[in-house]
Image (cartoon, rainbow, N blue to C red; front, side, top):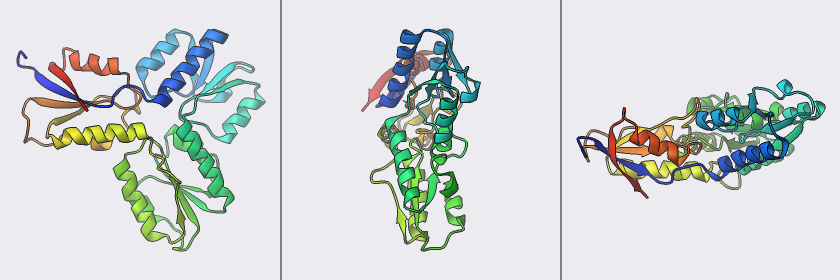
Length: 278
């Protein structure tokens, strides 16, 4: 192998179904309407995908208020708040919603818990677009919980009617720790009927753990400023002992498989003998 390191790629890889759907919606919009079309926020956290769309005439904006009246506007896979939809209606925008179906499920649950009169404890990163959208469905009844310390510090009585929801791309482990604190502190706690963690994120985290169990050194590659959330907490070196000369590789749900292969084969990394590990 010419002195290179063998890299083992955790499975699964490539884009998840929600990201593929969001990309397909923009492709269809370009085909039907032509350029320019507008997308509120990055459609996915992947600079390669965003850059390619920009070259095709897609304009990414931070707010629906920046979109010309009557223009085509795509909402990103991360979902939006009701206020964003009202703003778009007021501007007469031709809206295409590319929200992930699991994010839409979380929004429905947020509205249901709010109607039940519960304080909603939203587990996630306050500055993430998905959390901003979910928060907007019940802003007067929602408290964002980012850490275990936040959960411990909540100023609510033990018998308060509360419910929790989670950002879909969080680490399963860190979410579990926060929920455990909520379960210990509150006697009238409700949660989602099924896990909010996107199964594509869970599968990738399981793949990383499988590699860590083989005691290889972890490698995670980011494509985008916020890329890697599903993989970050478990993509750490597995230790100095074990299979010397091996590196474990993974990619999050916004990264194409070809990008992973390109990174593995690029000269700076000098990694050889790539093999998928199911």
